[in-house]
Amino acid sequence: MRSIFGYLFAGSLLCAALAPASAGTLTDISFKSNALSFINDTINGNGTSPLAFTLTSNLSQPFLNSADSTASLGYGNYYAIAFQGFGQHLGAGEISFRVDGGALTTQSVTFPDPASSSAVFASFALPGGDLVTVAATGLSADRIRIVADGGGLFNDGAVDVFYAFNYAAVPEPASALMLVGGLAVLGAFVKRGRR
Image 1 (spheres, rainbow, N blue to C red):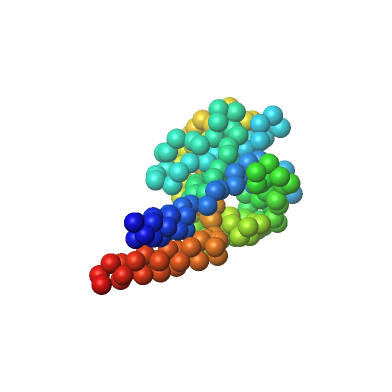
Image 2 (image 1 turned 90 degrees about the vertical axis):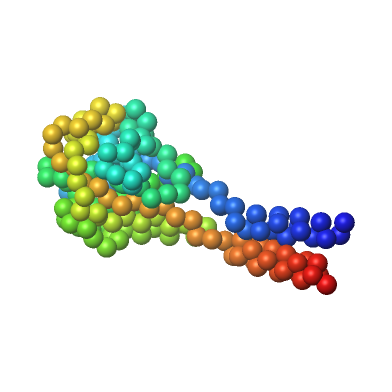
């Protein structure tokens, strides 16, 4: 009976260690450049064009934005879609968002030429150790148009650019300790069972 409880205890430690951490939610995401006059964002009602988000499987994935252009992102790898040519982000600007509806997190950035892939040009170390990074991919396709909010979530014949927008969890030290502890307890019970 004791060994069954031991296995259950070891299993619970392993499950707790391997369970994904709960993600914060990113909202009110915006890219701004050209003296902050070129704006793509996920904010409804402010008269700006959308910043569209998709999964990274291919360039024609459905938008993750709601019909009004708002978006809520958890941990994951995404494409952020903005304009190329007229209205494109190039040079000095800023990227901002809210985590769990809190204060606006903003970083001054230098947008690279979006027609070419780039190294990470924005990196946010968030409270709790989570990380948001942004890089140009050099990929392009016609996905959005220069119309405010949800009306901009349609193609218009002009090519748009895709940025790699990644929101990652950094493993918590307690998770690593639980994993090691679970493996140690499991190993001890397996060893004892062989005697």
